[in-house]
Length: 319
Ligand code: GDP
Image (cartoon, rainbow, N blue to C red):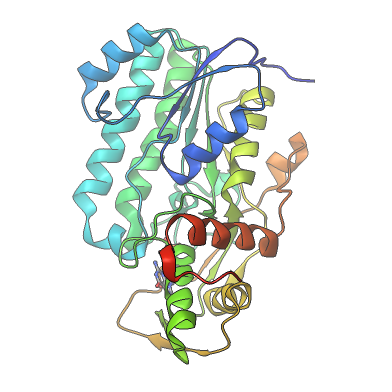
């Protein structure tokens, strides 16, 4: 039984062009709500006065705060000012304006990188702020921790129904296909696809291939976000993941099999490995009744198909 009804609500998806936000828009199309989006040319989320004015005008009931400056391990490590400043600005502007305009419910999307580098695995929500962060993404992590705390503070002081979810590493339609700045799944789809087209026998992985990561399909994340908005209200944020992890080499082998490329992998130790292991304890969300429906192979096929149709261009082969 839903405790929060989206019927007839004006629902703003902030960050609707990103992988998470666009998946949330697709998922919300199955609900009887009015989806509101704001183009970048219409609203600059870094400007507080603009966000205040836009929200006052737009009469928003519900916010999915999926807007963020994001990137993979190298982008995080090399653009610390952008990752810290822009993410802090986006979330403070939106959360503050949501309070001022009487938004009924807000869901903030964080990240699994909020946890200490050496947190016990799988990582429980209670591990927040119990140890030092992973240095390659601490700027992004600090901003996301501030976002969680903003939701909690506005809930405590003003009674706002603002909740947060912490998604694990994502992949799926709408990922950023940027070999240097993107995340590992998008980067490997690009590299392995290019190797297949050019008949190259090897592909280079950054780091050692041994770090372990958990991967969640973007459409599953969107389903979890809608589930949480409807069924959860509380100060504690919720992990969203599969609870299953694999090494980066195993990930690469799985992507190679999806793409149909039979070469071997080499390693570039000059690139960072990042956290040795990152896998979520998803017990809290599971106890509420949600678990990820899509298996990894199926999700990966969809992600690759999206790449072929939207990015891969005319050189694309049909797998
Ligand atoms: P992280 O989860 O924050 O570390 O972010 P990423 O998704 O960028 O990277 C995950 C892991 O994949 C790291 O250990 C990277 O070193 C490794 N990796 C291997 N090859 C690549 C690549 O081509 N691009 C990226 N972004 N990561 C890679």
